[in-house]
Image (cartoon, rainbow, N blue to C red):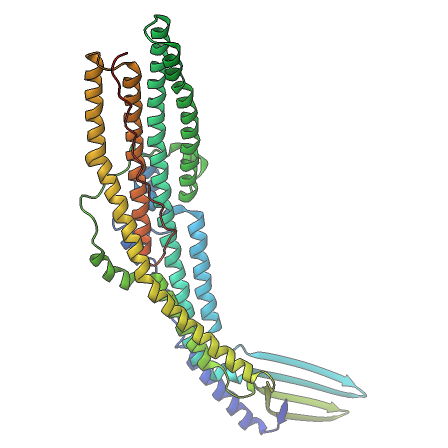
Length: 471
């Protein structure tokens, strides 16, 4: 540190000029965040008002829980009161505030020193600030802008992930409830079939082999019902956690008896491309990372001089009855004589990596969208086939089977087998509906740049019932 005795006017003038520059820089700090989550909510839940995010309106929550909870109602509940989502949004706000702190003018350092001994007394007062920090204030503010944008995008990402998670949990819970209802009906039918088989066997109308075959379906149905009950509880509790419900609220949670109707027409891929290009969060995050790397590279010092500190110092000393006062300016420099080259290479590599990452995200975005749309279209086609063709055909088969049984053209085993096949057809249709709505949630998230794991599509249908003649 070098001490220059410039005299009071010069010292005061130099430090005053620095303070003017410091205060002038305050006016150009990045503005606080507005509302980064409005666009995702408008896209994924257009019926909801984005302004209700985080507003735990007790009356509205009670109104939602008073009736069977729809998919949009589940999303609204989560956005209003989910603690997990609130934690993510709070962290995003903290990150934005931290970015503003890092872009603030440098802090002033105030020093006071008192030395005495040998009849002498010296008191020093120092006011200093980082000159490089001050001179780099505009660059640091430019660098903070991408970090603030990244924090805003993190908040939007948290909302997208929460909505997607809630939609999928709601679909699974409603589907599990439907599967449970079908399993209960299947058990009733299996019990009736087993009882009828026992009576027919006792009367000698069927043999022991056919009797055992028909009676085994009852314990199988009981086992399937137990599994369906466990699945229903598991999926319901997963939804409760996603919604952030209390124990009392969870007790009042009611769900619709079936999943929503399928869309009448498929989505065209061409209609989705413009939406994804404007709204994808992964593309915006990659561009923000590139902007931040470029801004950081521009702020790094080029040579070995990495920091300067400017200070005003006042020193008063007493030697017996003699008083002496000096005032001046301190200027300190920090030199990095060994790491300058490595720093240049590091900042250049960071910028290159950010550029390559942006290009990788851009290249994969269209491919991921095509994949998600193909899964959506396949799931929609499978579900439509179940509702439009397979279920009507299965009902027709059931009607004809009953006519054949009444005409004594087939026996009891064939009739019961067809009843089981009918129940399996309904279960397969429910599974196809759930598969479609999972694909729909994945596609909507993909449009906003939040890809999920590829869906393993199932085309399972109920098996044909065995046919035969006679009893």
